[in-house]
Length: 557
Figure: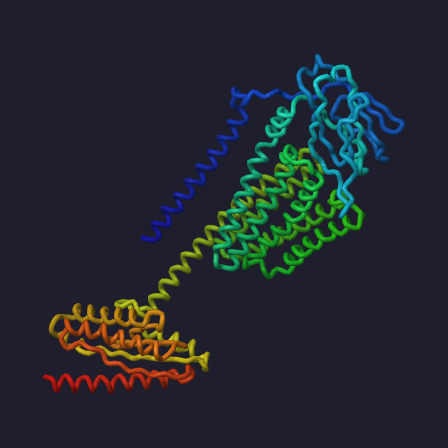
């Protein structure tokens, strides 16, 4: 029956997965081939300035349209000038420019409109960063000369020779332009951050240390990746002015991604003892400290030391390839769970590195982003599924354990539960212990006259009296058919004796309705290291009281 249910669940999961895959493929096809008939909110468009710009640097000069790249190995200041023509640009009051790790000044005729200022030096060295900047030029721009002054900060040609596109429009059109070109990045960003927060919160309530650590570090990796993507998609530039701080956060988030990823993998039992993984993880933390120290000492900015991150990323790939080989030794189910996610990450990282080096540095990143998202979602689902499975197993064990130590009829602790408590107390020799032994009278007579079901009801009533009388004072146990025990630790004798009086009063009320019913009691106290002796003393006193009660009943009869 169980195997049938498992097969049904398995087929249902496969059906849902197939549906999701088909739906995703359909969405991609629709996006690629469906006609665009809806243009969203009617906002003013922004236009790329198609004018030819006079570009001078050092002793060189060219005339070119944007964007372009020039050869400027000596990091000469670049001057870009053009005359704005209102009949070509139309209505608008602002320009949008893409800064790339350089100081920028913008003039309209001789009026300074924008200056990105000096580089960030204190408390540590930090570059200008790469970001969009909208600059208000006003409505009376026709016939005026737009001059853009670029002071490159780094020798690499992608920075020192970069001539950015210039867009013209309104502030709202620029916002629409940035959002429209980055909305899918933004969607993935918010999804990663939301998933990461969920995994962190879920991990807090998981009591398995390894599973909790796995969810915690996977969640931190997801949030960290989301923050990095959020900065890279340039949406924050619309709302924040301090771009140097945002740039710094981008470097930190990027640097910590491999570290958090490896720390997540180290939460698995199969990997935690892998020395090379621990070394790579530790070296990543050390690398981030080194980069911060280099910036603090004003030796180089995080941007200049990015080659270290690239090298570390390659080292991380080697470590994950080693993991793929070690996964082969795991059991089949575990191998499938671990192999898929790591393989996705390794392949996407290798493809991304190849794309960055061989095809385009400017448009790189998407392959890695897709790989990271697939890895995080798959790993999160696998880990949560494994956690829930383990929770079910633990719950079943807890129920079985409770059944093993609980009397099925009265729901009091049984003889095993008493022995367990006794063994704990034997390790606390100076603890004060009081034991009450209670044995029912009249049970055989009740069984003979009214049946065993009636006798069971009397046993349950006795258990209720015992538990209610000694509530918060001692633990009650059923240690035999009609024999009970109360174990009290570090309680005042007078309080315990008061509980005995309450019990006797309740028993007297019950005995008035049940012929021959009564309870014989025996009570003793001492230190926990003599607990067996205390039990025997109480047991002997109970039997003495039982004989006395029997004689009184016989005399009455």
